[in-house]
Length: 192
Length: 331
Image: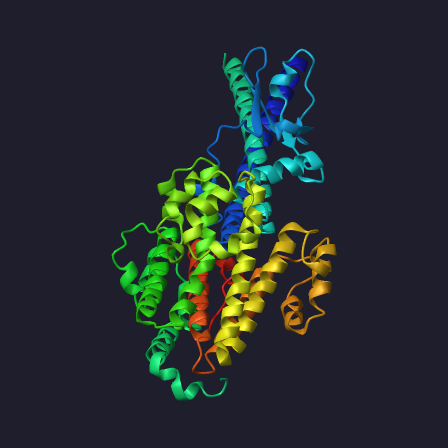
């Protein structure tokens, strides 16, 4: 009886974890949509302010250069839940900080804790006054000229935020799939 | 001599002044903009514009439309109007009309040089150039490595040649030097245009000096906003938009512009400046027998195209609530 209750508790915990992850995933997709809408409108505003001859695709740099932002993927031992980390403005060796999901539940030591851990990448400090980061941002925008409108800078920040949200979504999706797999396995075990 | 233009202006300029006033009456009205702002799709915009002077330029464009297509076709209307006036004009009006296009020429030169620096295809860059700023040897700009070569190989035979005296160096063209070149050329152009208008005298000199001074001031403020703390005299010590406001509010013509902005708000500054510019250009039509009406018409048409661009973007992005952020009504 005690064992049944413990099993029920574990099943409930898994179910809650799955639903929390799914809720966070849907919230993040909604947030991404609104950030992208804002970014595109700011880009149109920058084009309106600076003129279409200054803000268009034909001024983008085709010379080979290293990426200013890279994506690092780490996998668990069993490959069940890959972890995505954004490394922004890598020439300044800036890496996004990670914060725990506020809905994360503590894992038992004998479970694969890292496999079910839901992490959010959050990089508020990257959007603040780091000189190196600001230089890298200005360097990216310099394809449009040196004297650019604040609207174009706002566009850059919006799309940067959208990129971070995308990584959050990738991590959250990974967590959702992992939770679902575990839940499904528990249900199958129960049926047996 | 100021005041006697009525006796002789119409001999050479009467026909074209009538033409440009006719074009002015074809500019979109507030009712047109209200209809456009309520469009759901770009095809709706095309349908509304078919009843305007832009109709013939858009009628053959297939769906789905793109915002850049609308802007390109509307610009063709401006170019056709300009070319008709230029081919009918005699001196000194023909030189005056050519001066109006030098700003676009400078923008095109900078676009080609910047694009070449970024290893873009020249043909692709030429397609993005403004048609009013084209000249014969523009494609040759791609071979220049520094400003001296730029001048010697291409620009020495163009109207921009006199403006290069302040920026001929052997330094390689990079983003910073290109930006300096852009602003140095534009400053020299505005000063030259101003001197030309002063030589013409009369109402042309008086009205154009006001319009060109406003253009120069607007550019100085924009340069400051985009790059503070560097700027012009008092503007040079400003470190944010509020300090710029404090400097500019000392000058009555700019008090009304900055009064429209809340503290810390720079986003609406463009719209405030455009509104003031439109007001000044509309006032140019209140007098007769001067050339400033041609300049004013070209600028008003460009503003109209900017409005159409913004409305199209808001409709295409389903952001109609933001359409009034940047539309400047002309009438």
